[in-house]
Length: 146
Image (cartoon, rainbow, N blue to C red):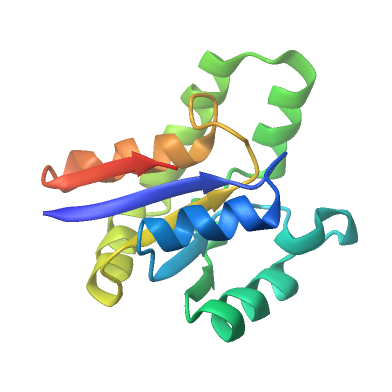
């Protein structure tokens, strides 16, 4: 059995974010955001988060943009809010980018990786879609949304 966690940063204080990761015994955060370098992201800015997780808590960090939607998909969803269209555009992108290969790489290196995105919940977030896509190829994968 493989275990995969997911977490969002929006509206989540740093103390809650770290507590959730530590309680789940996450050993690596896999950042799957397309846009992760803005100074407005606070602790969730790529360089800050990488340093904080590694140096402060011994949690690995990787940015895997091949698991992020392209700007056109993000922008279209921002404009029309059509989740079904978002999914219809994003899932073929995962296939094209061979997301199942990425899953194997990550699950070979880590015992309890956690996909990171901004959305506060997983219901309308691409981290859920990535986890579900991986589950197609890894039926023993258990996905837990923090």
